[in-house]
Image (cartoon, rainbow, N blue to C red; front, side):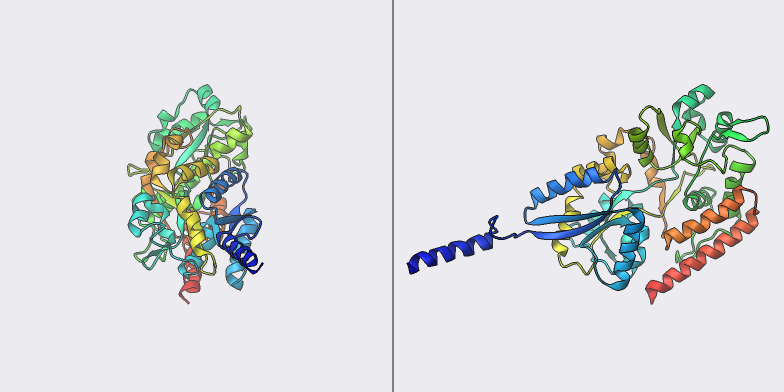
Length: 420
């Protein structure tokens, strides 16, 4: 009898050690916070299932959140020092100060060496996760919003113009004037163009005009300069001189066939396919305002981060490593609708052949990364001042002076935060 009991105890011990189902759950669970956008969820569902199959000792507990909730929970978690997940997938604007404060775990070499990270990713996607010789987390989405335009094919055909007519900025303006419709009073009834992300757009134009945008230490922005004023004048001219855009018309007008083109990222093509399948659209590159290359600002990307507080760092970093696989990265971005931060995924035919990606792919090398510090606050300042500009409520000189002053105030506050 004693012998039988010993055998049973031994068998149970082996089962506990090996994690036999039904006796004990040996899985290590990692919690993950993500944006629960409709175009993200299908990819997450598929990829998580594959990850758990390849890593049967790890379970993923994903929490989908809206944009505002995700931002608030991330900020609150770091401020209070509690309740943070093992993995967070967020835009850099949500966490850039916490990267500078080294509140995330640096990426270990078994996930990717520093050399591999720099070789395999677009360089513009790396700057905001780099601090004092270490990369914190990994980027996965390369966000571009000002280097391309989506256009309504039917409207352009009726006007007798094509994207090939927009090979220079001057030709682009002339083409847009042909696409713009007005009523008897001169009011624009169908604009040729709608713009957004003024912070990145106008900053990119400063570079295209040959200006210097940042101080040597990159802690101060130059806007109140000749090239800064030239870029702001270009923005104002779109509304008040060339009259190709109506400041009252938003992007939604494009979906109703009341707008010829929108400056926007490739994700918009995926939204159109899903919600407006009968609308025929195409993408083409935004021309440079000068004879210089079409530089554009990249101030925010999607990144994967592991908080230092995580008790499951190795398992969490296995998820990051899993997502550096080209097939997995392609699957994610084909749902999300952004360029991948991984070059191999961008050049994969499944992505590079699509009309939302192929025209803009050659322009990615012109991305210029910039740390806009408090991205949401900076964007609000840009929007408020450029709104005054396009309605003729403020002059270019005043706009340049106010923008430079207020943006640099935010930057100083931000730098003081993480420099202690």
